[in-house]
Length: 596
Image (cartoon, rainbow, N blue to C red; front, side, top):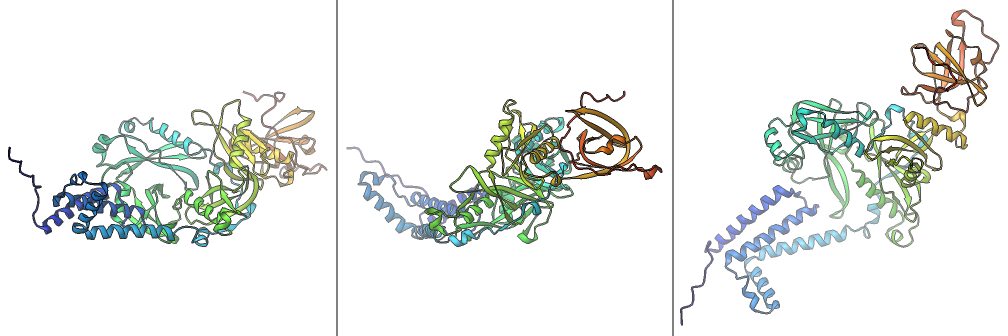
């Protein structure tokens, strides 16, 4: 009989203290790598923190198995129940503190989840968001044409990416990030986005100078520009190591929980990352809210924390729209308690699926519709929430949902194959109105639609915002929603430089151009008899609708003439007349052609 081979003994420290030390070192090493990669907040309100602790416990126990010489396969020859008992006996004898810690963590997580449930804290969840009632026509003023955003996120990203492709010195090293943020910049709605390193090799060769530019897309004019920086941005999400935005934040604020940082620029054009600080306000894990924000200079990495009330006014994005929508859903569903939210559902409301942004008073507001939980065909009203302060108001405006308005607008242009974007809510003639850019298959905006919220059968389209709005206001008057006297009016004064005339539908119209202008103002002779005797050189004041610099012809509503400026007598004809109902969109074919 051959001698049995000697049993293999594991190498390693022989003393118990040495084994414990080795186990701790390996656990700390694995924990350090995990922390560097996953960046959990060292905060008892963070679920990632408990995952981190669980991982450390498991790593220590596994290390103890190996360093103690415990044969993991020995138990395989016995009953599975005996094998499990053997494992627990080993943990009890070798890893008792770790086992106790594991159980404590498990109990804390389960109890924390339990005491954070809405069923026990319905009132606290309902009060996460304070909602006031607002008056639409008073709070939401009618914005001018040069303030209406005509792009959505996808279209803005497409234009930004296309603009990057025109820069030969950048396109080979950098790429558009597609991580754009809508802000108000110098009084205009724009989207800003950083650029990224094209790949890891490009990062390695360019990291010392940083990212040399960011992209800004004007949401009104649809112009995209690459803004070059005198000093490159060293901190971005495309940085793989310590200058990564999240890693820099975690090392600077190890206990803070953060929402996803968003890219913004201040009024001087300096790039920043805005990192909202997240807290749990109900129980251990419930009631997610924002209490402040860290502003990180994207060039230097300098970080400054501001409490919510102290956040600089140029910052536009502190509260995530999805967070506000979640808080309103708690507010709307728990208004009469948890039981009612499940069974009776009396007065229960929720937000619709989608949101957009509105620029008001140099702040960015999130807009979303509110509907009954039992109805998906109509809205009860809508919410506007300030993205910096979370000031939220509800506006009662029963009518079509955003999806219904999109379908209505898309149906008008179905022969062209245009796609309706998510609506933007506007005040047009004191009427809540969905403004919907219509895009082609290439993500370019080709047309615009306006749909009345209360009556989504009132749909106007146009190839420009001006044309669309003029048609929409005409439809409002034709349908009896508004009267002509309620329509927006403005006026212009000057000396007549040119007069033309035409007969359309049996009515005479006069087209007036003032000195220094290229725009013609149309006046109906039937509604404005004084137009018949106007002469070149007369000084007039013309009231008209919806002036915009892109319009060649505007519909006039009344005219006042002043010949005293030239010493002539004034005819005995009324100077002001009622507004006209017909609108003219182009010079008629019968009108004389301008001289070359």
